[in-house]
Image 1 (cartoon, one colour):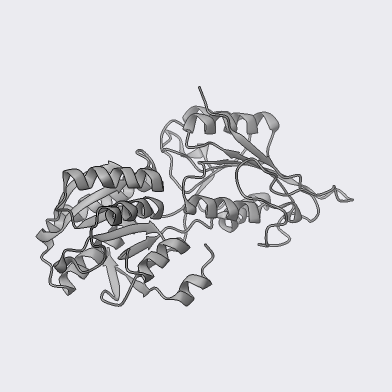
Image 2 (tube, rainbow, N blue to C red):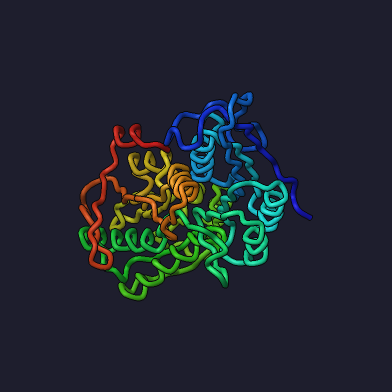
Length: 363
């Protein structure tokens, strides 16, 4: 039986769509079933675009920032009617939401899929209804790529490769033999793109550098599951010295457990500290780098709203957008021990985290 899904709707009209590229939220109150924005109909015959947005849920700080980006982009002031469905982590709920969007005759569907598979049938229904589908964040596997118009999101494999390269170079710089790295992995939702691709990056590095991957446990991208998974991993592998977390929130949970169990946390592996690595780059995550509890974070940029709107603008103008669009992302650490990493012949700088850097960021 599906859990109750929460709905949000924005009645939009005021300005022509695409008049402005971005603007602050005009009345949204965040996710959870509240109205995003509303306005009275404007005079004239300006076309209002109805956007059906199927979101994963509210499992992390990253996800909340991602939802805000969508809400702040698709406002009534910009000429949109936003229908927001929170699937609460259920792909089945998302399929139901998409069918609801089709019945309502929305202009565009934006899907941030819980998992990669199982979308062929419902996306065929959207195609038959001539409703373009834009996939964001996580990827999907379908037999026919024409079932979705474009994809926007992160290169999660590259994220994993970058942070593993940082770990390799950091160990070298500190005189730590690669074979002394004993790693546990707090996995995200199994079957999701971040979990699949970040795990692939880790396992490739383990094979190349002869790291010891001791175990993996599901952290589910949440702080609560991160706490639980870390407790299980510590009990079975007390000799671990690196924790590879699939996102910031599971890392926060891992840190709570490590601290509760009296483990030393930080980058000084030679003196028995546990090095925590993470993905996302939320405000709280970067503050953990600043206070020495997380060693390195590979950014996963959640601000997809403007890029999705750009795709819709192209479609409205009769242009064909690029099928795959990666967002820009960075790598963060506490200092310049590793100034840059190189993956597949491309160099990526490592940014040292400062208070100013954190205050200047958008999430």
